[in-house]
Length: 369
Image (cartoon, rainbow, N blue to C red; front, side, top):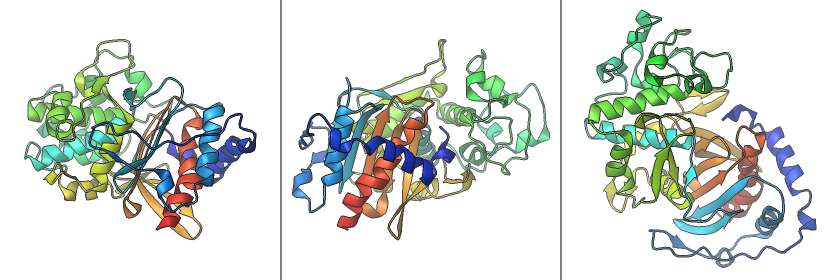
């Protein structure tokens, strides 16, 4: 998804258009405290908090009655689910295709693989672990210098840019090919590794395959054993929209919003879960700290750093994003996690959650601090 269009002006326009009919809602929104589901989450009532909830009620009144493509909106504060709303036919038990949020979860899996010694160092060349296939076309000595770090900072130098329809490695073009791994490795080099970052999904495919080949486990089984089971994430599956057989390393994750929030909680707690260090604190810090910029926005190891300005303060979020409006947005200093799912695929409407954060959630919850 193209985050560069998420400039303040566009977000403001989206929000003004959306809230312009707040006062004309047909039905009044009735808030209810999220339900205890025996899934590890505690809940609390918005009414018990000392905040001005006026705009929260206005927002959900409009979402309840207006036309939009948001499927769910959750807000967790101090490890309690405070807001949990679903729209249309969506519900708490329904899995959602996370799209590129899967990349951010894969970043955690890479950290686990490093913690366990399965992978020695992200500065190792990918050829140390990726034994099959190997590049056969567009042979270039620079390919031997591509490291895992380059894969997770989108800076391999390969002609791979999902946001450029002319790029040979643009994901929709690759999906039409028979062997996605081979095709990606055979892409021509257009930059030296580590010099330019372009959004490249196929680089994450290579990284996932490295974890798989190094561990001897498919990526889904690796995730289940080392991440999902410890977090008590059970309602999860892997798939892809491509109309062909897809290797496990290329599949995306399908997960419920509450389980997406558990990923956010793991980030918030710096890799710690129920007194168990699932992934090292060092890796979480590294993964969520800016390493490069993509379209002008700070990017770590498959995690975005997105700033939100409120009055004279700037709150920087650790954010996982996915096409259509899939988000895990973590504010460590505020102990806030926001989760959204949606169906606004390839549309600017998928940025509406940013406006909701900026103009509704942060004014209510950040000013409480």
